[in-house]
Length: 353
Image 1 (cartoon, rainbow, N blue to C red):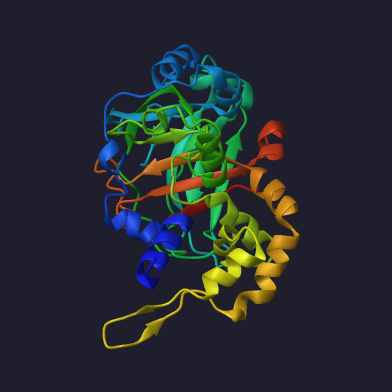
Image 2: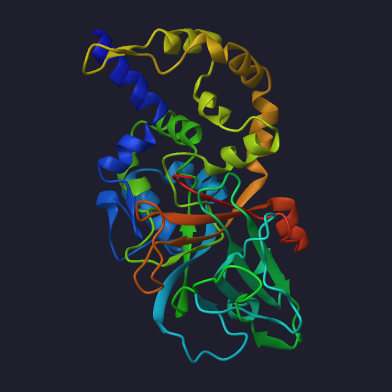
């Protein structure tokens, strides 16, 4: 194999997300060429899909891996929405005397969404959440790392008011356009978990893997997703959170190397750029980092799996929300915190911050 062919093969193995975006990656509400108005809604539809794609013998594994979610659809403007109603954009409804949430540098955060938990009480995700209350999502500078974020749970019975953004005491906050939201149940697979997907495909070579995974793409157009597995498929965004937590930001990119031999092959990669410059994406500068990651793979995996997708909101015209290259904002929560109804440690990411 030529050196260019070798480089191409390795890049395919590690999943160059930037190239995938250029070739038709996620856009507002959709995933490249997989845009459609239908989606997988429940276990019965999953069984039908498994029969059609040749995976009936794997039903147990796939049912265990699948997680319920709610797909979020825009349902009209919400300028006149009642206090405490589920709504994206606009101004937040918060308990009286609540101060506008701010970042550590005192900059006011932007309000993204509020979800009245009574609205999801009869849905497949109800058992994952407190039964009542109003969940409100705020985030700050999307280019910051980490992004400042605050999620507030206002208890049922709180006296709410439409909170006004700070004025004279700080920078103005330009609210997003308010929109109403419709929930539709769905199922998700961990499509971002490249290792799990590759192992599943290798262990079941006779099935129609493309048809199986395509059925799990989110519908289009869609405003976002509540709970379930994250819809972003190129990288495991949760790894970025963990590596920030452990003081190794950016090193999550090195997890693609499964052995020291694999790393040595990666360091041998090179290509000639225009002008004759030689580009080497990996170097011995990361030897110690790769050794640490290889020695702690199990602990890292457990740490990554602690994080659960809570809410994603796509760039969309209804809210006048545009993030980077028409991407989404993703809110993640520690799974133990979710079970306990604690929302004080939620993290937010975009795919290009």
